[in-house]
Amino acid sequence: MGDDDTTRLWLVERTSDDKGLISLVYATTDGDAVRRIERAPIAVEQSGGVTAAVDADPAALAPVEETSLQERYAMEARRMAEQHDPAETV
Image (tube, rainbow, N blue to C red; front, side, top):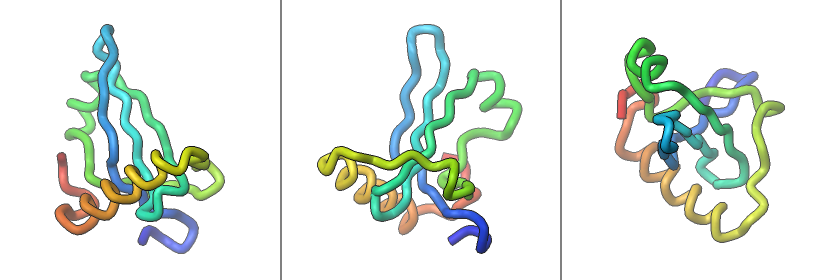
């Protein structure tokens, strides 16, 4: 878990569009909340890459309404948490 003021989220989805913009979705291990981040490839490269987890302010998280998506995100977030350190580049 992150600091007392933050929630730990794990990378559950990474896509890129036709212009190369990278979209990342980080979710809680229960799949109930997400944070979506869009970054240019150069920004990802300059920051050292994409990490397995991020800590975020709970107020900045979006709810996941669709049950099947919650289940998929929860499964992937738990898998990432079991297999990676939070700061590990993935």
